[in-house]
Length: 130
Image (cartoon, rainbow, N blue to C red; front, side, top):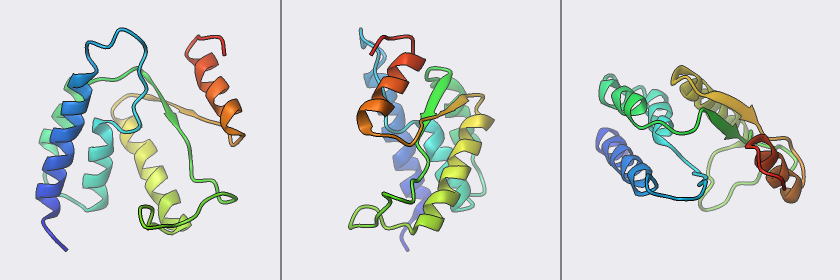
């Protein structure tokens, strides 16, 4: 199965690198993934020691509001990149919500709607007029 501990370390390093690359952004920036995603992954693989990851979650903070888009059964498909079954994706989503909540983020669920409506919802929630 490979070295999951080393993979987790690499994920953490890349997540921190991505975070730091955005620190000087002058405009609001949205991230698809964040440091707490690594915490979720570590929990999924039952990594025994998550102290470094937990410390990084405290140090590298995003906006308080985190937008989550739960798996949507009507449009969920698997492919070469998305290998999880819908049931696995739902369980991972619940664990991801838990990881972000444990890191003191406010979870905002994006409604299941057309892409334009989802984008408008996010912008409006952030205080921007769509």
